[in-house]
Length: 239
Image (cartoon, rainbow, N blue to C red):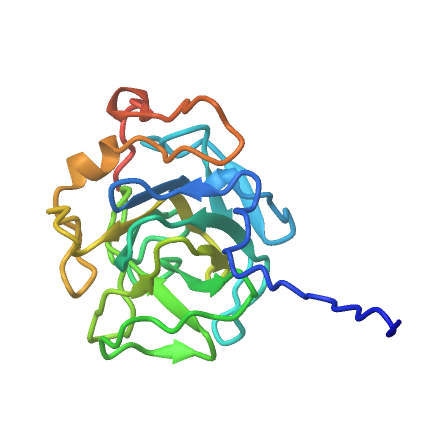
């Protein structure tokens, strides 16, 4: 009799990796995140709730200046996407140091895939620093949803996200005194009909943005998201 033939088969798993536990789940073209939900590095960010008008339990405020060296004190927000599209960044931030609307008004942002590779934004005349993008606003004395890149040009930042894929949104400190309260990534197409900001990053429909529920997260059976009624209603201390 002949020698039995042994055949070994190797099967490659091509399914997308499981979302990171606690990842924000995109739904209907929206990802809504509380800044303070990310684990903090207190050498770079202060968790606080003394400035009125915040949502959730508080916000993160930058403690150091890194104007030319992004990647310090990285805050991470894992997300999982079910609707392909170009997602624009709007975050709710505030100047909490000084009296100038051009100072303490920005932080670094980028998005990476599930392998940690930076995702290049949709072309929009942007101004990168390596793989990071300065995101700034220009209002003193109140929270504001303006989220722009490129000084003196002001351009919105968008990333093309694919259904079934996992990503991580990252923030690193740039300016001492810049506070971030909420982060929204919204699908600019796909028939969702959102209009939360223009191509320059200027916000639209801010009352609706304020009232969006925080996105559900993997591994959580309930969504205890803040809504309009739970945004801090202390007297606004506008300067």
